[in-house]
Length: 257
Image (cartoon, rainbow, N blue to C red):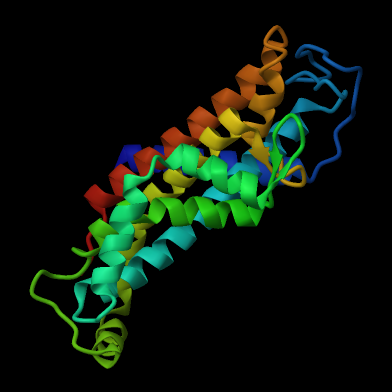
């Protein structure tokens, strides 16, 4: 395991698990808008909430969104790739569907879907957290589907679902590992990035699952309270950088047989 891979893995686990633990800890509240101090290391929010707790909850919800989005994208891409690559009748439909989705401007399309599926609140759009993850995954899966056609060896084709089942049983470890390396981590980053886009532009979010994007939206009107904006932005950058390094290092160092 390379040093970069160890560093990225430790950083990701420290941010994710540390946030999960801190989000469950009851920390003292204070007056609204207090700057960082010994009592409040990250300051307080506009409601007097401890920013340590808010950032921890936001980081973990952001990680959870990435995990969900990555899993949905990986499963859909893998199943679709088998059908596309094989001699199934649906392969032409799936290829055209992927091309159609890729041809749409994703951010405006997501905002339109959010308006249809969510509830406008005046300052944004309230949309179920898990439904948002599903919509983000479905609109991004097209770019991964093309890569999925090359998931198996170039000379491997399937004439029936039975043949697919035989290959999957014989090479389960290969299939699962390759799916994770090829699709999961990039889909994780893609999901968070797309969610950030619709969150910043359209204020899309779930009040029950505040993410780093939620904190950035709130701070947009109060930039003079730098700790409300800068700290979430820093955590988001560290989180995405750690995952991007992980994706690169895993592809380079993990051998699949």
